[in-house]
Length: 180
Ligand SMILES: Cc1cc2nc3c(=O)[nH]c(=O)nc-3n(C[C@H](O)[C@H](O)[C@H](O)COP(=O)(O)O)c2cc1C
Image 1 (tube, rainbow, N blue to C red):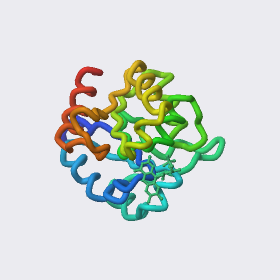
Image 2 (tube, rainbow, N blue to C red; image 1 turned 120 degrees about the vertical axis):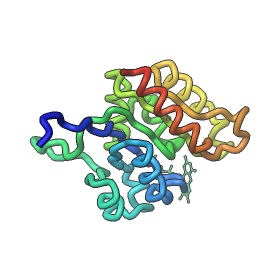
Image 3 (cartoon, protein in one colour; image 1 turned 180 degrees about the vertical axis):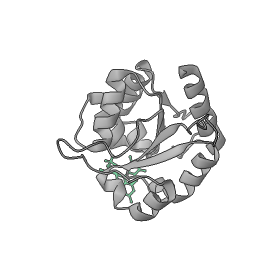
Image 4 (cartoon, rainbow, N blue to C red; image 1 turned 30 degrees about the vertical axis):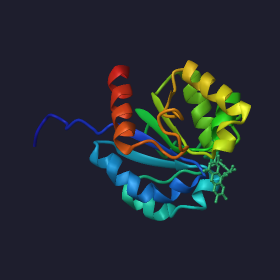
């Protein structure tokens, strides 16, 4: 038997909020796995209603987390090397920027922001009416100031829909390379 352990795949937390692309998480996980990531799915309670968490657990090989563990329980997921929030809702983005940790997702994101690690890529998905709400631009500016990579460029993508897949993968690759 070889003495050398094979290098492990980097762990990616795929964080899913309650916007329509949450329903495509089952298609997204294999794409991320094909790009070399060991994917752990974490969903907000609202997003979890839109997903088959059992099927995603089988696909990813990890429990799909939606809620807090109890005191004294071990963390059921390995530590993340990077996080991708896709889709990121208006609600979660604003709570994250304001420091409101009232779901497992916002708590994980607030802690990552405070710690400055791991690298986080965020793909917002929201209506233009919500893009124009003054809280949104303030939240995005604060998150970017704190080093979060927000893939939201209304001037390049006039529709508030999600940015191209190859750009998401390239950004993830870039932020993890520059981090380590
Ligand atoms: C059918 C439907 C579509 C929605 N689409 C969006 C959306 O694209 N973007 C968004 O920010 N919120 C959207 N919402 C609202 C969010 O689901 C709602 O704000 C929710 O509280 C978000 O919770 P979360 O941020 O914890 O996932 C939608 C709600 C419904 C019922």
